[in-house]
Length: 261
Image (tube, rainbow, N blue to C red):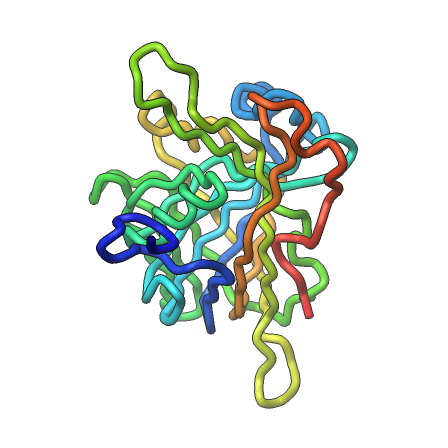
């Protein structure tokens, strides 16, 4: 048997998985409480009355899953007293990246068109699904060095759902899984981490059933960071099994999603 299906040639290998020299634009802002409450699973609560959202655009030229792009919407939250980023919406551009995220950790991934480019003095990122229908567009002007320690540092939290094969069955798998990811800023030849900051704008698509990200509208200042990173993804940790309450009772928070050094 291969690690993953299909058995005649597994789509993904066993962790750890790696990304090298990825380009990352992270847009952080506060949003309204009610849409967040609609998205968070049972026992997961917003960290504040104005929850923080991190919209992370990523362009990876070299990884376990080959070259691909991603866009991830994280919501700052708390579960059993520990802070996390709930991984509410995720999009990628390759089948292996999608399969790994959904099958291993439960990332709610779909395929989309994603780009992260340096245009003049700006970093410009876009997310479209289907092509031509904008879900999000972000722009950041490169102005100054950023602080690696200011990068978001909570672990990721995923709701893993695998439906049952028979009619009327509940989900075969329904779990909260901690995403054990480590990301570090690339250090340049001069010894400085490749982290930059500056003013940014964010445009979300039209609100509605086909574009739930648009409900997470900014209500305060938008902060932006651009960084070159190395990323490694290991096995996850089951924090809660909705079918078996005995699983995950003693698990505590682990490493952050992002790390500065």
